[in-house]
Amino acid sequence: MSDTPIINIQGLSKSFATKSGDQLQALDDINLSIRPRSFTCIVGPSGCGKSTILRIASGLEKASLGQVLYKGDPVVKPGADIGLVFQEYSLFPWLSVLDNVAAGPEFAGVDKQTRHRDALGFLNMVNMAEFKDAFPHELSGGMRQRVAIARALANEPDVLFMDEPFGALDAHTRILLQQELLSLWEMTHKTVVLVTHSVDEAVFLADEIVIMSARPGRIQDVLTVDMSRPRTRADKAFGELSE
Ligand code: ADP
Ligand code: MG
Image (tube, rainbow, N blue to C red; front, side, top):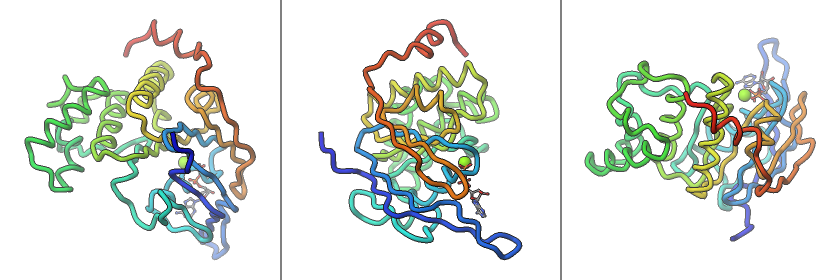
């Protein structure tokens, strides 16, 4: 396994212009290497710049200073290499679950038969195949996030960026989805970077925990966690819960 970072965040700073004409410094000199196939959680208080890091690293927003490298090349615009899952992922309400998952590949020009077959495969991975013909409004929040994950996987990215993906879910559903995500990560060998304000979630999921402080957002500490540790909290709950 190569230890060459898949993502390199170098001297990243970001300021926003405020309404009063001042500058708000959201990020100050963020330096971070993400190893391929690692599960990194970025944890910190609301407003410390977690979402801004993901937005810049995925090419949705520009850095004020510094850069983000993906496999050695600067990230300048969104691409298929990085899949995104947000807290409230806006699935297309007018498309079925299957067509939502197949939307990215359709945009990329994949033929209908292939993209529907592949989409079904990704829905299987998140246990949502039986809901392929449902529409987003017919699904629970947890189910919608499963579809959002399948949809992100459908572009076959190497990296998944997840911004508080379980933040809007009730506690039981959140634990279920955390467990499922961990299994998915072990199965697919994707590199995952997940942002959360929950230390608990980071400790459960991550093999690398990046702790941030606010105003301006800085990295306070990076902890490496033993992935073979027992995960009693969710393991215990997982056996007893269902949605
Ligand atoms: P987090 O995700 O950790 O809660 P954000 O990255 O969303 O934090 O925001 C970090 C800081 O930058 C906050 O103070 C936020 O108000 C500010 N900010 C984020 N995006 C913008 C923007 N587009 N314009 C102005 N200020 C912004
Ligand atoms: Mg945020």
